[in-house]
Amino acid sequence: MSHDEILGAESLLENFPQMAQEMRRGVGEDVEIFLHFDDGSPAFGEMFPHDDTLIPHWEEFADALEKYKVPPRWFEDGYSSLKIINVEMPEEVINLLDAATGWRNLGFETLHFGNNNFGRRGLEWALKLLQGNNSALDEFILSRNSITDEDMDFVEQLCDAVKHHGSLTLLAIGECMTPESSNEENRLNVMRTILERCSGRLKTFDFTGNHVATHGDPFLYDFLRSNPELESLRLRDNYLNDDDAVHVANALRHNTNLQYLALSGNNFTERGIAALETALFDQTSLNSAADSNHRCIIHLGDYDIENDVNGNYIGDATENRKRKIYKILSRQCRDGSNLMHLDEENIVPEIMPNVLGMIASLESLREYQEVQLDGELVEPIALVYEIMRGWKMPMLYCFRK
Image 1 (spheres, rainbow, N blue to C red):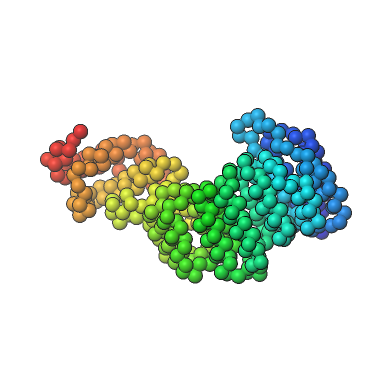
Image 2: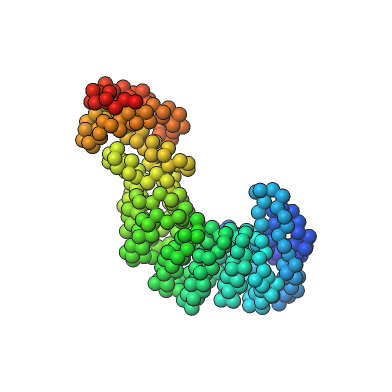
């Protein structure tokens, strides 16, 4: 072991009695049972291997867990969680913990098992905890625990549990499927099955790092176009390509619920990125801008559309839509072409009082975006003046309020 690993092991051995003591005492309103091994590495780091000398520690931990009950919450923002990360859990350990927890509702709001090498027996125990904790549990996270081709029935059981769960909103299956443990078809089918069967229950689904490739299958388009209730979809570090980006982009034009889409670490080129960007802000015309997606933020790592002038910002979709229309009108105002474009796009005079009213209300929006847009926007009064001066004034007068 390296020096850092030795320190991490010492910390883990200290962590066992500390967690057992806290569970027995029911300390505090924010209860986090966080049994972990930290070797100083980023992210998950290395897993601490099991040794029989740890069994007494696991027995003490299981005894405390058997008697544990989440204490009353004194503050609205209190939170309770059970996390076991970077610690190997062989079947003997799983059996100890299963006997301690059974089907009991422990009251945890987050269950997180990461990098435990606990095999099928561990998957079954984690599923049992998910099913038993049916009233308070909000997040269920499996990370770097292998799901193999032989575990497809587990996926079906997981979907049934999620679909009928009383409180779950977040499901994360991260780095659980690899080319060594599962074939391409099963990896894609697992993602498809969970999305199609669980989207009515979940608000967030994370399928990061599972080596998924669609090979042209349009199911992401079909799923997102159906406008499910899902608000956050995280598909980082998979094998999605430009064709998938185009499918997603086309679907987003019909989706008003998805607020966050994480796609960094996939195989996109400029073509795929351009398609996603256009879905959020098609600058071809006023009509195309208005028909763009105004809700979703897309994260692509180094190329983050959230921070680009063409993307959406966290907040009201109506404000995002106004900002995009404002930008196009400003661009056309600078070259004096707004009147020509209004005619070319067959903008009817009936809607112009509303458009002018929107322009007049954009001063605060212009100030908010001034730094990001680097002075691209003109003063609202300039837009009003250009349109009122020369575009169908008699007809506009007829539709005044």
